[in-house]
Length: 335
Image 1 (cartoon, rainbow, N blue to C red):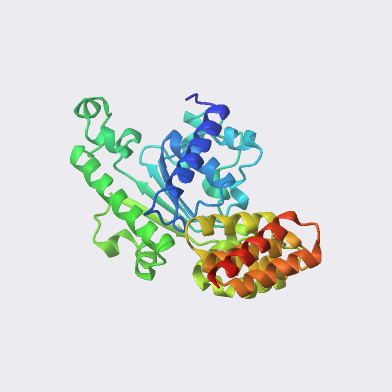
Image 2 (image 1 turned 90 degrees about the vertical axis):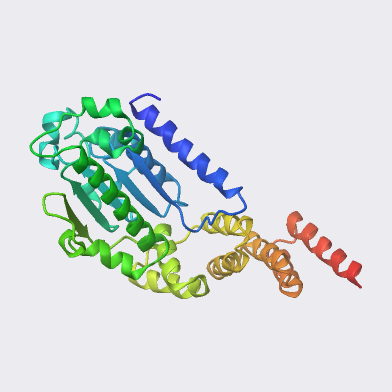
């Protein structure tokens, strides 16, 4: 790995590859995906989230998204000011946001990611007793590392261990809040450390809720996560009412639905594909995909009707012709 734009892009690609691999496992719930990255991995995770809409939340363990804003700018397509994901950002104690220019020569050459993160909830946890290396579990277990850590003021190794435990606790609450929609976990994040019995001079926490998130496929996906796929058409209509220029891309919705089908979430896929038909009533491919989902669901009558609608739109749709023949053959075999 190289510490440059190419290196960040490569690692971001690795993250998406691993998500794809997880999709092939039998016990993976692909509707709940968060990516956590330590140091340089925090920057790579940001890049991946900007490009892969399967990612629902981000955790940055003193991630380099703070320290290499020039690379964020150079990426061209990583725009934190437009991202609507929740972000949990842990920061080390000895470097403040205001002091970064003293340490990183390119700190003023791109967006301050945390300041720009206004369209997704942002929880910033300032770990007052942790140096950068202490955010790594491997380093926490490395006796040699502790000899190299420059301890300052009255923070000792025990404070570093306590800080790491608190980081794990806040990460769990964050994942429960945003992936499991646990109201008590969200309340925990919004409360002060003192309310949880955490000693003063250990951490500070700032919860900044999202402001006016722009309508996008990500915000639409978040809304369905809260309201349910059965409301796919209503949620879209509501978002369009507030943002008349907002349009869902037919191919993007179809790709999303195909992933859901592959994960055996067929009812959710049907809801999305019905939305596609609603939005694109003249599209033969939209009807064909809906027919395939109905067939997968075992609803042959609705599958047949959808294939016939596809052929009404495009009599030369060879895939719809073949799918309809296979469906009719299956029906004949059962008789």
